[in-house]
Each structure stands twice: as structure tokens, then as C-alpha cells.
Image 1 (tube, one colour):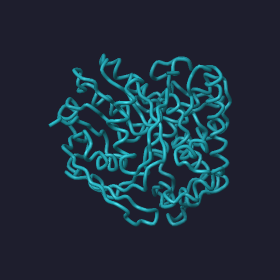
Image 2 (cartoon, one colour):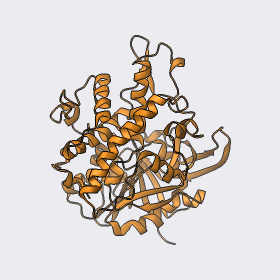
Image 3 (tube, helix red, strand yellow):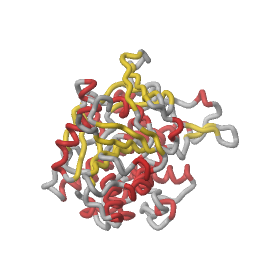
Length: 403
């Protein structure tokens, strides 16, 4: 009997509740590194639902071990896969880094590659002198995933029609694809094959969450201001999507396009096939024919039930939760990274600037100065793990980040 490989999921995000059941009958035994091991059951269930909530199929997968002790769970790992918010990646990597096995090839990846995953992994590789780690990351989370009961039951509405991922060294892609990628989408849905991106910079400049979430939150502010008196007055995040938010997303995407196109111009030998604008990426991943941003959201059968993340303040008013991942991931490990690139490339990005000014107002922080420059020295950006601006990894020029 062939001994199974050990895969450790790091973090308990919604994608973990989908990933674990789909790895049933794979070549892996699955464990999870989590701050809440007592909440994880021995069997993780996953419901595949239609948009109206009908359960189309049920999957389940065993969990070998749940632990909050990295020394107990990481040394045996052949694969380590992160399923947590982007802004927690670096701290999570630092927690597991001392315990990664040096005596075999270890595949270290994430289900979503926004924010410079390769920079983060290289950070620990250099610090701990690892030469046996294979880095990989998805361009987009493969499925729409939610959690019904933490540590026990997840829900998915299906997988994307296609996806892409990067790895380093590049020669390991075929092995990762056969051992891991094919087992979590194509095996179950007959679609969702993963194509190889030649670089991680295309993932870092993903125009998914970091432009969708921030432009929509800014759009809500422009229409409603900061507060709602009653929670019932808060619009749904996607179902009530409006022209103002759609236009902001288009403008934000245009800022990113200017960055993408300048990178392509400066590095003509690079393969930037997956460095796509929003609608091109949406058509690729869903094999759709959408040509209108607003319609792509309000007509989505899988997004209509998602609410706007709000909290009630001391005055009893409702406001967008400024500690939610839409800020912590998509501002500090999204828009701020793009802004740094724009500064290096001498490109004006007015919508990114406007969103950063709004975000610093909402969070009462200092991100961008009156001259429209990132306030790199301010602890609002420079505090450990707070943001993913490339200079905090030691990069000084745009050339330094082109992998």
C-alpha cells in the first residue's frame, strides 16, 4: 500500500471547508493548523447548492488532525495550503516557518494569490535558509465557498470554469496539477482545469477582490454616506449593485490597466497572458459572455445573497466594518501595492488615490499624503505585517518585483 502524503491546511476560512471534502480519496491525508482546533470535527461536510438553496450533492472528507501547535503538525507536511485572509498570510508563514521539514520537497501554496504570495514565501525562505520549498498560488479561489457551521459544514455553489496558478520552480507545475489541482475541481465538476501562469505578478495584480470590494464600498459611501440608521436600510452588496459602483470599478480597473500595460511595455519578453482586466478575467474564469460590469453582478446567481459587511457603532448607527477583509486584504495588500507600482512607473492613478483617501478617513489612519504619495514611513503602513507594499520586502524598483 502506497503511503499517503500529508497535506496541512493553514487557517479555517470558507475555502478550507470546501477543500477538505474534495480531497477525499486523493493521495493526501489532511490535517489543519488552526487557532480553534476544538471546533473542528473529524469529518467535514460540504453541500453543493443551487442558487436557490437546493442541495444538489453532499460531499465529506476526513480530517486526520486539528492542532494549534505548529510543531505538532507542520514537520510531517508534504503540502501546506493557506486558507485564510490575505493580510494574515505573512504572520501565518512566520508561525509555521521554523517547523517546515528540510529533508524533503515541501509544496507551500495558497488558494488565492493576491498580495505578493511569492514575496512572502521568499521572505521565510531567506530567513530560515530553505532551498526545498516549492511555491504555488491560485489566481482566483476555485469555487464560491461559504461556511454553514464553522469546523463542520461548508457550502459551495460550484467551481469556476477555468483557473490559473503560478509555481516556482516552474517545472513542478505538472506534479502539483496531477496531485492537487485536478483533485479539487475537475474531478468533481468536470471543469475547473488549472492553467499555468508564467509569473506571480499576474496574480498579485489580480483584478478580482481588490478592485471589486474596494470600489463597491467606496460607491456605497458616495451614495449613502458613512452610516445607516437601521440595518434593514443597508443595501445588499451585489444584488443592489448600482451604476455609481460599476463606474468606480471601471475607473479603478483602468488605473490597474495602466500599470499592467506599462509593465508589459517595459518587459516585452514576459508572458503576461493572465494579467487581465476585470471583464476579461470574468469571462475567462466563468466562460461567460458578460460585457457589462453591473450586469455581471446583479445577474449572478451565486452572489445575490451576499450582504454588505456592517457593524453597529456606539451611537447605534450601522457602518461598513472597517476591520473587515475588504479593508485589511484589499486596501493594504491590494490597492496600496498597486499604488506603489504606479509611483515606480510614474503613472497617475486617480481612482486608487481617491479610494485610499476614503479608506484612511474611515479608518482614521494615514496612508496617502496631500501630494498623493504613499506614506511609507507611517506605521499605518509600516507596522509589522500591516501592508504588503513591496518596499517592505526590500524591493526598491519595479524591476525587483518582476518574477
